[in-house]
Length: 75
Image (cartoon, rainbow, N blue to C red; front, side):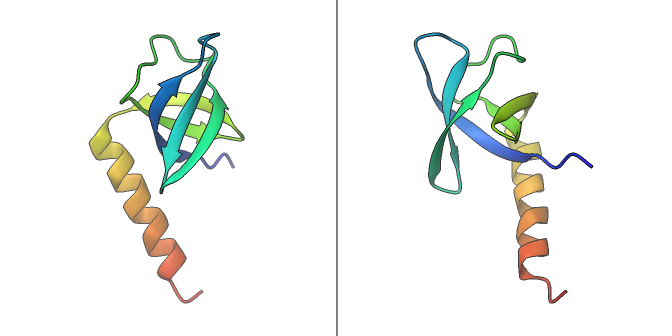
């Protein structure tokens, strides 16, 4: 099973293959070489430090909401 998390691009690094993203206030450098046309402000689905898909803001919010429900569940 592949589980990715949504993050917002805040900076594209010089080589264009890496970017800094924000996920819940945490900044992380990720590889974006699999996705064409990544720009600051885009939302990406991240898995193991690699962007695997570009998503829209609404989808990112829905995924984060689901993650929040799982975190708060009494499992």
